[in-house]
Length: 192
Image (cartoon, rainbow, N blue to C red; front, side, top):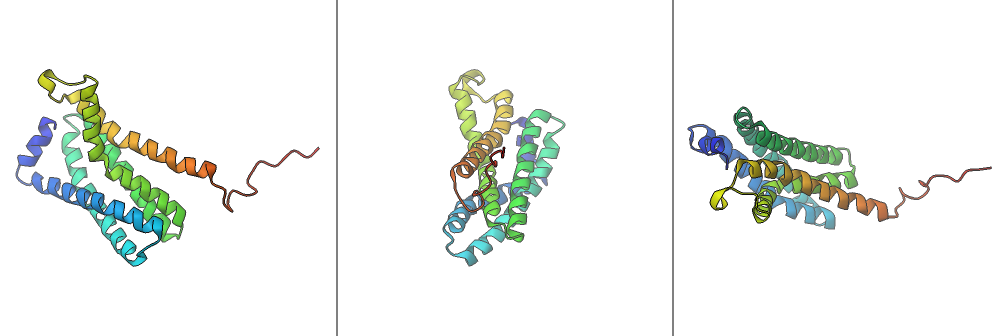
């Protein structure tokens, strides 16, 4: 953890935003897999809708806390804060487009955006994974201490790489699926 974030947790008033961020993020992280399972299996749609509203609220709560924490970090370390800002933007965008898709009854688009949202919600888990990978590759300070450089890399990698992998899987399914929307969409042959 960077020194300014450590100070944020101990300074009066700033702890509230950290706890809002943590509580919202953890709740979203716990609800996300349940939501994906309920939505993909089309089971318990009432529960799915209720949990979806809770998920949306927890994302808003978490992002509210994160916004303040990022703003406090930005002047001290703009590269690290930029990675976290990218994460916040990605989570806002994926969740917001998932919500907009379901409001417009675009079920398949909703599913895909919510898969992306859950991947982005898992960023703090991936953050730890990437820090451990960097340690294994020898990127660390004396006696194995975390360095500012590896935390900066992890702040960017924790959401961008998993999101890229998720996108590849989503698009891979489209490339190999044959549905009504795929029929007749091939490039027509040239007529002589």
